[in-house]
Length: 78
View 1 (tube, rainbow, N blue to C red):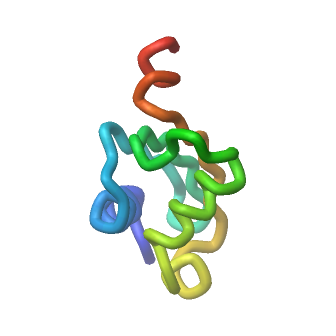
View 2 (view 1 turned 60 degrees about the vertical axis):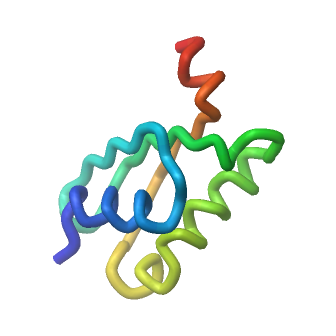
């Protein structure tokens, strides 16, 4: 069973991130991801970048992942 820490590692491995936070119960996960890669991209494109970083793990290991994505600038405004 995949852990939130593993998912965080996978995301950080495939995507330059300023902040990653993952919570979950082994099947359903929630993530907050802050990356400069998200600048100028729509929310759909941001989520696609995260899915690309996770690769086949989204089909094989991770049952469900909801996420909130932010640029560093948007994260600083929170």
